[in-house]
Length: 380
Image 1 (cartoon, rainbow, N blue to C red):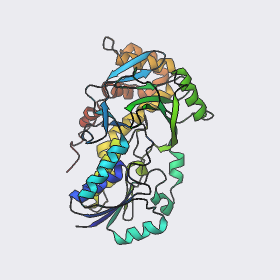
Image 2 (cartoon, rainbow, N blue to C red):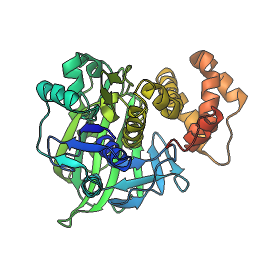
Image 3 (cartoon, rainbow, N blue to C red):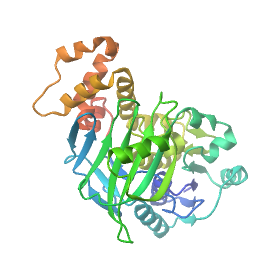
Image 4 (cartoon, rainbow, N blue to C red):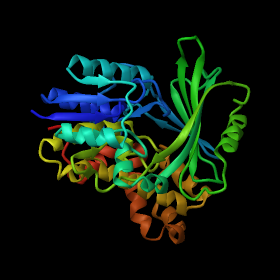
């Protein structure tokens, strides 16, 4: 068997390391911090394609509903979704220990630069770069600008306060003045006994001039959270477009480094896990078909979400809410007359909207993808 080096101890890197170890390779993993130490995401684990398993550790609760706040409030029942709130740090530490038990050599507090990357290329058959946005490989191969041009900005606070009113639900808010959303993801009590939630905001394309901090502070007032204590502030940019190619000599990109994030809601844990496993599987075959195989699995989901984002950007806020609200209501149906009402805005995207309403509104990504004859499960 071969030698595989993995850069990054997040979901993509850890799943790659575990997959490689299980397949008999000699595996080394390099993490510039400690595994589980730097967590910036909202910590919602959404297995949209239903091809992964429930996290073995760190589950806080299974999400019962997604509460959507627009002018009116809507609820998406999550009974049939594989959606959990997790303590991602605990989950990643568990994956790290699991990898060690399976023989992976893990080097924490180890920074990889251009020099070290070249050395790893020479010492290993394959290097899987899961080092996140503006990955190490982009510095060596000169494509860092891709991330700047294809990313969204996010800002998040970890708040201490009473979030019991949300229950085992998560809340998102869509507003008329921007393409983006804010979120309130409760986490229960931490080790210090504080009841916390991740509260943040993200902007997609076309929101120039809006300040993240100003907007998030406004949201806190709107949701009556302005007096809650801020325990932590995180933020940055998240790539929302898949790179092509994903292979550079004997380096394969996975997770955020590959731009594998939903263009609609900026979630990417599930995509990171899938890409880490597929990268190892394709490395054994030479790597030539990595992009093709990965896109065959996740491409229809990402394209559907991109289509919806474009649809959202075209429609006025009130029109979007009308269609969205009717689609969620059990006693109402989308009619040809309603779609015809917005024909001037939708144009050729009428059929895209029908597809979306038939699948995505019920979160049936897997069903939509199966119609495209995508094989499941993806693991060989």
